[in-house]
Amino acid sequence: FQVDLYDVRDAESIYAGYNEAMEASDAKYKLYIHQDVFILDPDTLIKSLNFFKEHPKCGLLGVVGGSQKPSDRFFYLSWDTGNVIFTTGEEYKHSDHSRAAEEVYAIDGMFMMTQYDLPWRSDILDGWDMYDFSQSIEFHRAGYEVWVPDQEMPWTLHDCGRLSIAGYDDRLVKFLTAYSDEFDVPAILATREIYPKENLEKYNMMMELKKQLKTLLAAGYTDEIKEALSNAFDKTFYDNELLYISQIASSKVMEPIIKESSSYEQIFDTYMRLQFDKIRNTDFYELIRKKGTS
Image 1 (tube, rainbow, N blue to C red):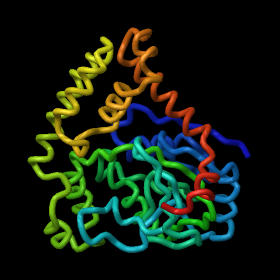
Image 2: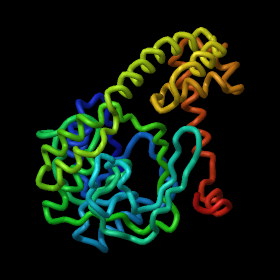
Image 3: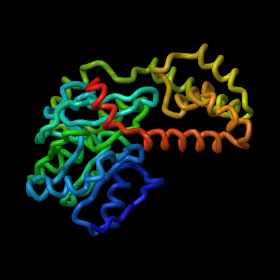
């Protein structure tokens, strides 16, 4: 095979960024994949292409999906099909929903592979959410099928950390407005908000605290960081970066690196590289065989 890589950066939205990548390539098969997804199975591309050839009506393929339309605001909890390993940044989980191939309503955006090109709906949607549901719906409407292939062992690991859902409710309303004929919109919006106003206020306070903690970390004040976080709100209101700052401040391995580094960015980049190497050097298939499904 010939493989071309398109690194999408500084896009206005994920819809616009994926359109840019799609239009830049004349490849029949395209894989839209998050920067925090690791390919575990070296035969992933071969298996994907074989699946497409065996299922010519399959336009869109993913490793995790949902068989039913969501009926409440928790769209991101609707996945019930597929086999994947994910990490929150603190622990690893094996989500072994199903190992047989299944046709689904939608797939998760971490791994979306196509054999036909359909525009990502940047004309009606923006931001970084709901694009996976949007594109799944667009493929259904174009007469194609959406599938999760058979995975005896997970093809991928998603180092997803903590989901950022601070603006989720507003983006969901915009999505439901665009696809009002697909869902029972009043019933969905009648369910409780994902991120009510009081939670958003606490989250914004934590983001202000994060700015101060970055300055403290660059100066090497790890004890002060741990004290500040112990007195702050719980981890519900962390984002990924704040979680990593907490881990860096408590890491013995990072102590000499913090002393030798000249900036927060240097400390953070070194930590992320160590995390990357840790994942790459872990045999997750062996962990599954030893521990079974968790």
